[in-house]
View 1 (tube, rainbow, N blue to C red):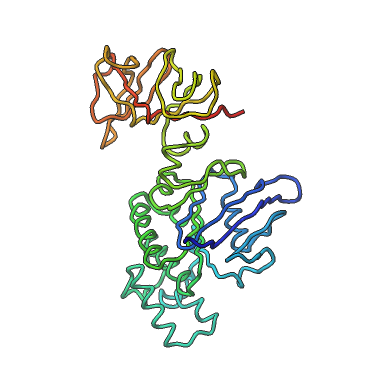
View 2: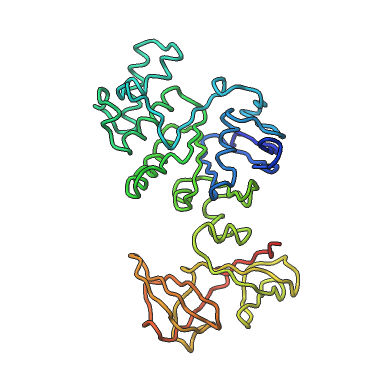
Amino acid sequence: MKQEAIRLENVTKSFDGIEDVLYSVSMTVEKNEFFTLLGPSGCGKTTILRIIGGFEKPTDGNVFFDGKKINDLPPNKRKLNTVFQRYALFPHMNVYENIAFGLRVQKTDDATIDARVTEMLELVELSGYEKRAVTSLSGGQQQRVAIARALAVKPEVLLLDEPLGALDLKMRKEMQIELKKIQRCLGITFIYVTHDQEEALTMSDKIVVLKNGVIQQMGTPIDIYNEPENAFVADFIGESNILSGTMVHDKLVNFMERDFVCVDSGFGENKPVEVVIRPEDIKIVPPDDGMLKGKVESITFKGVHYEMIIDAKGYKWMVHSTMHPLQGADAGMDILPDDIHIMEVQH
């Protein structure tokens, strides 16, 4: 049975009593979970992290740790630690002393410190770097030292505020894999902030998507990607074709001037809806065999697939496929019922 690590209950935050940054946010983070707060800049994800860490107090609502309310508990009394985007390493200390810092603050004995630092260096694959100056390390190595320092004091929860944002693309992808491996190895709770959709999908057990201080959807990466609850989530998580349609009745929707069988129900009859279809879920077929037909306006090679823009009755479809017709040619498009996602119209 899964156990609760962190719980936010109707948390609202405003600054200077004027503008709300968070609106009644409620969510539960389970123990040993890689939990990601995802959204664009200004959506409130870092504010949530700071409230969990004790660096900000909620204007209203409550924060619980292991079932106990911690609203007034200072950061140093909470069983968690934070890794920031800019590392915050001490330039006058070597790698060993940076990792040992928190343990020395706790007045840990030298033998325990030595064993713990050695363990952390092995975990982040920096064994032999003990005497190196942190200023001589690459960005990725500095980030590993910051993670090792945060983990050395054995927090129950690790907060990570866009920790890979300063790294180049290749290093960022490598560190994504490393972070997930570290989290699984230690079996502790990670709460991770990012605006990078791919990063969230790659690493997370659960994702919360935020917009303007409000939770839009919470679920597993597969749920968030395959079953977005609104157009914002569908558009933010990957690329999507989003069209206006009418739910004729359960499991039948009309868009692009024709009826399509789908798998959704419960929207009522003849109700306006939004239809989401992912680019990779559209099958290219001969023009006269397709459910829809359009003209190929552009073709871009993306490495593992071609990205096409196909104009069908004025709507510009984005299609991802390993095969493609010629630019300017007609193309047919087929869509399976499982790949048609229906959402209520957002007002």
